[in-house]
Length: 114
Length: 113
Image (cartoon, rainbow over all chains, first blue to last red; front, side, top):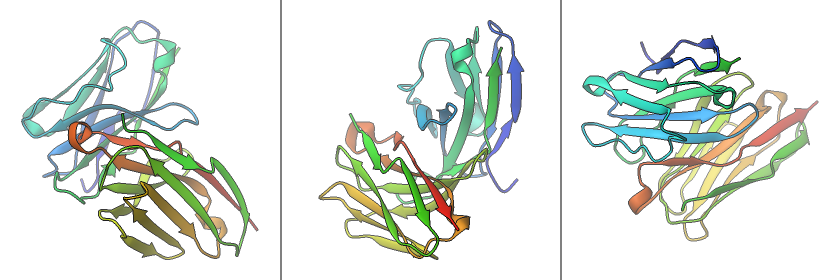
């Protein structure tokens, strides 16, 4: 597709369950970001991937959160033992790595933990 | 640690008026982004500013960057209702924080007829 694709678009899960959120970046984009946006709030950085370099995981809020990027393309964000405070929109973005390149965002995955 | 502050947080303005949103950041950076977000939607890229003195314009919106003052502005000229949205600035860190794009708190703009 032409843009950043995320799935599922909506997910309702029970507290304590694990969830996986998927991001398919724009073809050729080597940089990939995950952000979290709680209701009415700003964007919280979670993790950044760039090519084959080690990811910057400094924004992950706890060890229940993890992410991987296979083959330098698709990324999966996994939240284990979900808690109600994990309810948010999870946004993925991608770009070319060169300075000045626009960073494009997907439509997000809306996660509700009940 | 890179911090980004926007003001105002909320802006109600009448159609036809001009106003400016301010974005201050705490450490050196030479890459600043402006985004628009409509309710329930994702972020739409508006501008990428790369150097001191950079100015970009699109329609009724104009963005500028002063890296010495660590300040960017988004100026709205003759506002129309369609500009109602939340506007975010975001700054890429420099040096050890280069990987992160840190967002401001956002400015909710409501343009009244």
